[in-house]
Image (tube, rainbow, N blue to C red):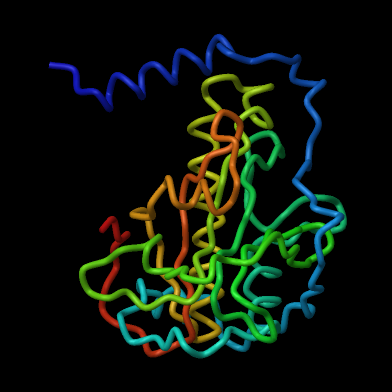
Length: 249
């Protein structure tokens, strides 16, 4: 009996062979595009600091962080500059430190945060070309960040880093296969953040259990065009625990 997942996989393979759903010739699809909010306040981030830990040591230490972070301590701009800069920043040739199908980069990065140095609780967009946060709007006065990422073990977080996919950016070339490309890209980006976060001593964990409706509302997403596909929780470090799972709850 064919399972639902094997059916989806086979269907995406057919989409790859026929470019089903593609709207443009491959050579006509623009590369390296990302969203910008030029009218919103911009917070320049410091240049990434060099990491003093070997990659081999980071890989050995990396675990999904435990429940011992302190969500009341702000993340510094230098920490964010290093975390986002090494993980996601666009290089001079418009390439980035992670792969993307066709160099189309459909994934956008937002931060929903209650604790960033010198900032009030707000929603931010990370602009990878200028290495800056764009402050979109403040969070509601009664906002509780745990309403987005509910967890039975009181998961500590002060920031939720949200990856969204702007579907047409990739589907113009790859059609329906772009769904798979977007998920893979979000995974590549996540691993960069997890490794750099580990090196910085931050509590970071992949979190797939966010409330889609709340996130879409906070980010003001048009879900016909752009949807949240993954997230990373961020909190000031409190030690690395023995866990290696993606949390769904």
